[in-house]
Length: 266
Image 1: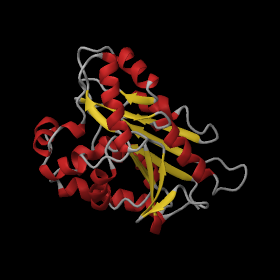
Image 2: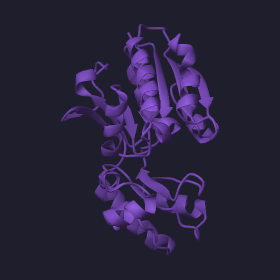
Image 3: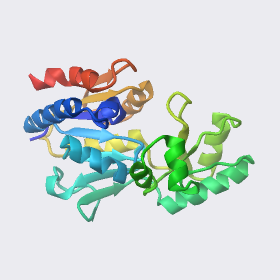
Image 4: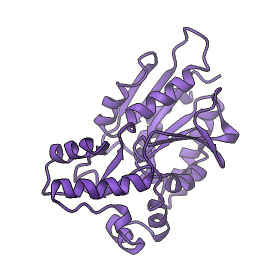
C-alpha cells in the first residue's frame, strides 16, 4: 500500500536525464526503480504536454501518475492504476483527469486577451515547427511534441506589458496564467481557470489518501527548484505530512535529486 509519494518537478533532473549521459540516466532510472519497489511512486509535474513527457517517462522507467501543462491534466496509466475509484475518464492507455480547458479554447482566449490589452501575444500555435525549434532551442521532434498541447497555450512573455495587467485580463476572460521570468524561459502559459499546480496536487493527494486506512496521513516529499512551487504545495492537502526540498540552480540535476531522495533509498 502506498503511504508515501515523491512529487517532483521535471526540470530538477531533466537537464541530465535528457542529455546523452547514459551514466546519469542509468543512475536516475535505478533510483526510481528502487523507490517504486518500496511502493514510493515518483509523481512528475511539468509545464510540458503529454507528448513531450512520454519519451522521458519511458527512458527513466516512470510508471506513476503524472501532471502536465502546469496542472492542467493528470494522467494515470491504466495498467499501473493505484486508485479506486479511478481518477478521470479512460482515454486510451490512461485515465485522464482534466482540470484545464480544451486547447482550442486556450488558443481563442489568447487572441481575445491580446485584443483586450492591445498588445500581440504569440502562442505555440502561431509558430511553425521550424520557428519553435529555433525559438525554444529544441530538436524538430521535440518541437512537434511541444505543439501537441491538450489543455493550455504557452505564449511569448511580453516585455511591454506588466504582469498584473496580463493576469487581470486573463482572469477577466475566465482563464489563469502562469507567468515566468526571463531567467525561467521565454514562454508563459495560458491555462484554464480551474487548472494549476496547487489544484492538481490536491486532486492527486486526495486520490492517494483515499487508499489509506482512516486516520493515516500520506507522506509527501516535494522536490523543485522554484520557491513558488513550494508555496503552491502549501495549498494542497493539509492532512499530508510534507517534506519540502527546494534545490538551487547549482544543486538541480542528477546528483542533487539523488541526494534529496537518498534518505528514502536506504
